[in-house]
Image 1 (cartoon, rainbow, N blue to C red):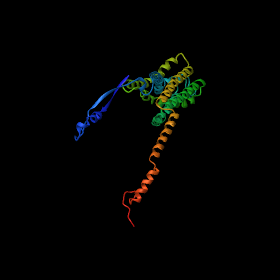
Image 2: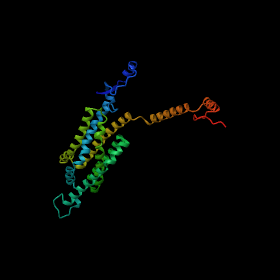
Image 3: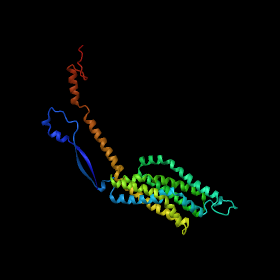
Image 4: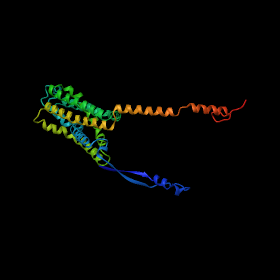
Length: 305
């Protein structure tokens, strides 16, 4: 639990001793009294403790295994070269692989995928407008699409499918990077929040070695099998995060029905207030009496003919 303090102005004490200070100037600066307020786990960002824990664990996993891995493309390029991606670009005279043309195409795949970083301002604005739950679902969709295309490309030998695969993974990594801060904001303000944000940023940077680990595994397991298992883990991890964000959204934001009821109630209150200030027959009679006495409604005396 986190303790925060709120200050209470000394206005009540001055009001109680008002009789003793009649005719005196009020003090320019009033002292403040700090009152401790206990913030329990359920008040930290509006989310319960177990939801925050699952969200942090799932976010940590996909930050390291997927979001940060996008920027460690070197070992992935080695795996693709060993699997024969774009080997058809090599001439028959070139006996050794990879050939320069094959390497050039694989570098172009990552170059085109890196262009998705231009969309960062738009994705950040979308996260502010639509919220984390919508964005995590978009990240889930893009990552699933990218890994499915990668698995199909390595299994079927369709090399050009690598371009849309890594473009989708680029959008996934770009969106996932937004959740280093979004996830931290779910925690109570203080050390817990700072540690969550710092840890997620560190895991995002450390994720660049993920493809290196997969490259070691590819020595004994074929790349299509690795890609398929990689896809399955992604759906489980990011799917768990999406469920947690759904629960957090329900806690922080009221349902549409509650909003409609509240809006209807506020409209009724406005109508009641408006009805209370409308003119009554008694008010009309008073106005008529004033006019008969020679005074207009604007307060000026009425000129006699």
